[in-house]
Length: 108
Length: 120
Image (cartoon, rainbow over all chains, first blue to last red; front, top):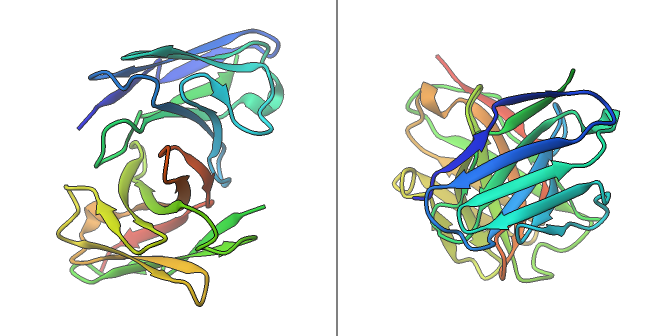
């Protein structure tokens, strides 16, 4: 089973600033990596797949990078609606598909 | 726009069977090459992939849960279901249903989730 590790667990950033979230895989997943946004009481939303491809309707301020074992989600200029939990998922090796523990992005 | 909605009992007794249903709206559950998936998240913990069913009816399960899990499809109701037997307090979680394509297994549509508590 591939273990996904996200850092930091909590990130405090001011609106308008840049946020950088990390995700590490215990072994290579090539580019089979997705990022999701999750707000309380809402369905998780797909942001990025293929490590760097934005999903339909996702604003350009969200970008993903990396391959192999190291991945980054960058939000270039934080909006109020961006404060949420973000988690990564690998889909190269299964079963099982595995997720990171999540990074909580909070307002500084 | 495809939407998913979980439903089922919020409280299950230990040793009993947890049964949840995911209703798909906005499209037919058999319209495309999709996997219909169950995922859960215990409070304070990360997401755990439980298992999935393809539109053909073939299934894949998390090895850690395989002996207790069944995912099934009801095309007449546009629903898919999760049965988890012999539950314990460790099965208390928010349960989400979701969809992925047959080609790439990222999850492009999710339900909001339903909370299930295992307690006597």
